[in-house]
Amino acid sequence: MKKMWLVVLLAGMMEAGYGQRSSQPNIVFILADDLGWKDLSCYGNPFNETPHLDKLAQNGVRFTQAYAACPVCSPTRASIMTGKYPARLRLTNYIAGNRTDKASPVIPPKWEAQLEATETTIAELLKNKGYATGMVGKWHLHSKEAGKLQTQGPWSQGFDYSRMIGKNGLDYYNYSILKDAPNQTDYEDKGTTYLTDKLTDYGVEFIQQNARKPFFLYLAYSAPHILMIPRADKLGKYMQKHNQFDGKYNPNYGAMLESLDDGVGRIIQTLKEQGLLENTLIVFTSDNGGLGMNEQGPTPTTNEPLRKWKGHIYEGGTRIPAIVSWEGKIPKGVTSDVYYSSIDYLPTLCDLTGITALPTDIDGISQRSLFLDPAKTSSSERPIFWHYPHFSNQMGRPAGAVRMGDYKLVELYETNTFELYNLRDDVSEAKNLAVQMPHKTQQMKQLLVGWRNQLNAQMPLPNPDYALKNAEKK
View (cartoon, rainbow, N blue to C red):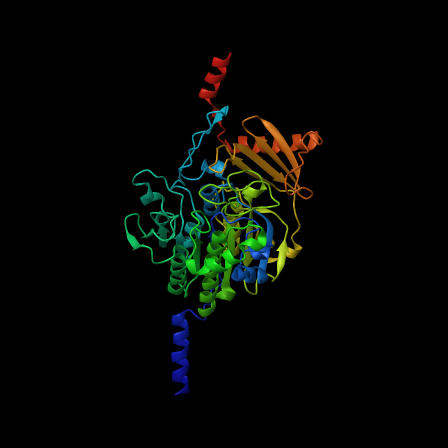
């Protein structure tokens, strides 16, 4: 009788996903949208309440110098998917980005407003390794041309399970969710279910459905991107304490971020319930810096002491929060100042899962040792690059940059001028050392220009209207 009960118990545990003994870790990659470097309480924010993310940081590594490959969303998302710089992909702006400035001497170059279907994604590599692959939330890598979503959507880029935001992705109570195809609507909201909560529901569903084999979940929240629409039941406490901080923080933003934090908590709880937490690598990060200006309503956040915000090549546009946790594999409570870029996720995840055959032209490098043993990994002199030949909606100008060690060089494409900063001593990028340190400036310039030439990066073009205007003045 006891043996029979034991068999029933073990069968039940296997059905629930318990007892998974795969040598391949599960991966949960959670991406926030426009989350700033100092927006989480574990990064020192005194206003926003993010207890689940704080606990995730306590159970893993909190990085203080993680970078997005671009100051706007689509290029960074492409870099995560492919391990390549946006300049190599020629996907250098957010999809549909087309702002120009008639008063500027340059206009943006022709660029690829899509992730080409021929690119190999991390989902395709993991799927070939036997992983179940799921994408939930904001994709934002397909062309707006009719029919392109069929070949450029997540269902065609290696994801078996896709629940992609369809219409009105920035309206948290009036949206649709597409299921595994461009024309198949799984859910359409009419003002009842908060979008962040719905995306979490899908993430939980995917984990539960795939608990008995290795899986990769890419959970891309739209929060806390504008529009600033929080759940009403979470807003009150942020309104009440707003005046305690001299109006510096946005209550709507805080409430939206709390919903995202709740979602992370539910994902972790689901992993615990399925007996999977000890075999799951969790990565949490953002696609670019926080929005520090009034774009569509009150300013959402501040990136102080960093310079500027989303859409700018300065630290406020590219330095982002990043937390990595893996029970029993990654040490707890570690803060790392080593820098890396979003291009590094694909080779790192491949390294951790035993995938050795990678595309030959990826730009990222594996950060396996940094993730697994961060205390013993010291900073290096590795250069990382940015290329943004566009005018952002957030008033950013065409520019490029390279960081190597403590130094960062910024090139302003409109004027062909250079700025040099020592980020160790001047994280605010307030003191330009280019004239003071000409040899370092020249060294960094050669790195940046050489990198662009190697990738055949597309540079801004002369603005014919500007030339005509100057000619008329003469």
